[in-house]
Amino acid sequence: MFKSTSTCLAAHSAVVLKAESMADKIEWMNKIRSVIQPSKAGQLKGTPTEGGMRQSLSDGSLDMMTRKPADPEEELRWMSQEVRGYVEAVLNSLAANVPKAVVLCQVEKAKEDMLNQLYSSVRIEELLQEDQNVKRRRERYQKQSSLLSKLTRQLSIHDNRASAASSFSNGGAESSPRTSGPSGDDWRSAFDAAANGSVDYNSHSDSFRSRSNGHSRNSARWGGG
Image (cartoon, rainbow, N blue to C red; front, side, top):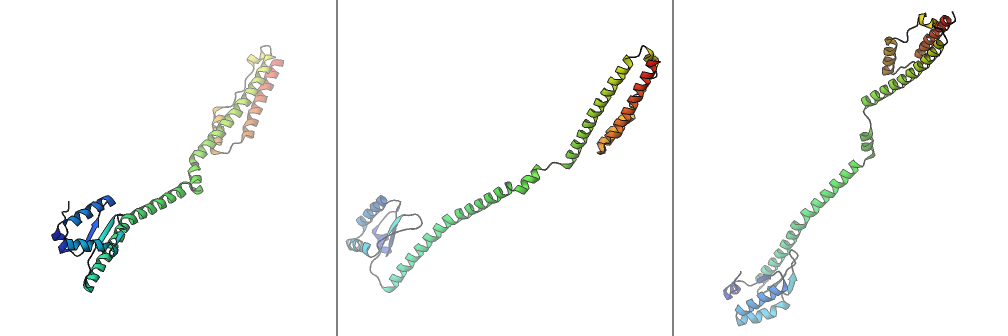
């Protein structure tokens, strides 16, 4: 703690008193008044009208400047001290607030850029686009599945017709030569065509229909004979 003595007050023409609160300031003022000389005390009582009380811009504390009448050089020295204190207070305020403002501006700018990039419609469309290879494979599988279902349905119809025609025969159908169904090459060519995207279902169905009709005619001929 700073020890106030008459020597300290005598060595300095001006004393700057800073405190955290008005109560502390009053307490220190009482201590200073108790140690100064009577002549100094009289000057101290008259100085508040000259020096007055001012508020610091740096920390908000009140400080009192006491000075005695002096020559012009002393007056200039006192004014320079006042200006120096004001400049220091402004610099402290800038040093405390400007970095925070700069960081806040940078954070807000980064936030705005991030949101603009995140919610950009072009970016969303790019994310929603499907891989072309996956799309082509899916379309090829869909074509193969559609072709398989059509072939299965067509073969089922032909088999039902052949079974109905053979049921009218009295055993002659057992000795009749049966035409073979579509070979494995036909199935392989059908799936290859579906895989390549060029499915000619009409040609395959005509081939199956002609074979089935031939099979039905043979069965009817042998059954009638």
